[in-house]
Amino acid sequence: MSAREHRWPGSVYDHGSDPDPRFSLANERTFLAWIRTGLALVAGAAAVDALPLPLPDAVQRALAAGLALAALLTALAAWRGWARTERAMREGAPLPANPAMPVVLVTVAVAAVVLGVASLTGG
Image (cartoon, rainbow, N blue to C red; front, side, top):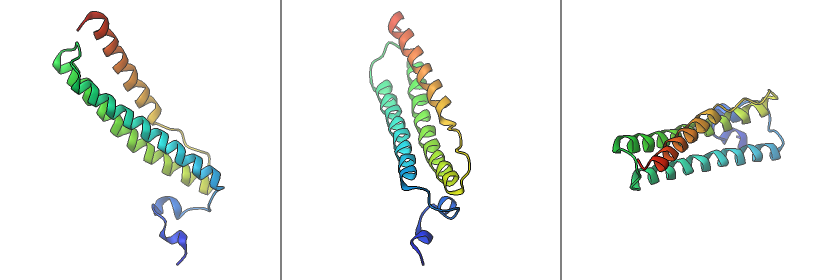
């Protein structure tokens, strides 16, 4: 058995041929950047949940839950994006778009607006 047969996930590595390692490593760095973004969203969710902010309890809980959900979606999209990009490189296909960007953009924008309004109005 070759080393290729033992690589996981098979849905990626069982297709095409190995691309230039620099491209695979760049794809992994992008994956790690999205994971760091997810971790930052988790930290933001924990902070919003733990701090005494000038927000109604229901709004504060909803904001924390929204940030946590965005973190989960970001992590899942990071994995899917890595796999789709790696497979496209292996098959010589065009690189796919990243659907996680609008999720992160909207979540951060909503959190910023809610916290900004709460700070300006005092709750």
